[in-house]
Length: 146
Image (cartoon, rainbow, N blue to C red; front, side, top):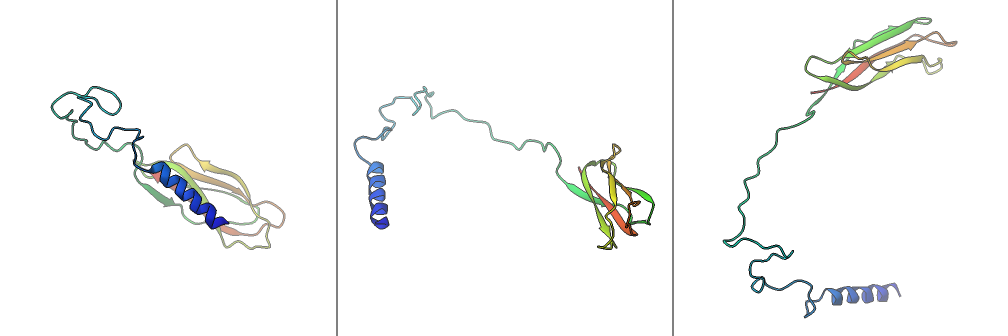
């Protein structure tokens, strides 16, 4: 049944697309005398010469680089802030942090701030004062566009 339906659909599509006397567009432009398919009058002499296209100047950022801060150790009961700063001529557009040497049974530290620092860098502030805290290390990464 499915094959018959498919064949019937294919036959209908083919017959609708067949080239016959009921075409919607003229077969040649000889009877239009200077008119385009849209009905606009085209100038005689073969048409309009358009200027050669030239690439436009690049606008916006073209390169993303990653800048990483130094590794920072945080002991139990202390707070820590760390920043990755983009170099001159680039703009900080985002960032993240990576925790290492973290004991899975320890309480996770409190992140008080993680974001653009307003001075072309990505900053993270961590509090490690919660019950069950353990010592760990982390570093910050900033993504810089130029």
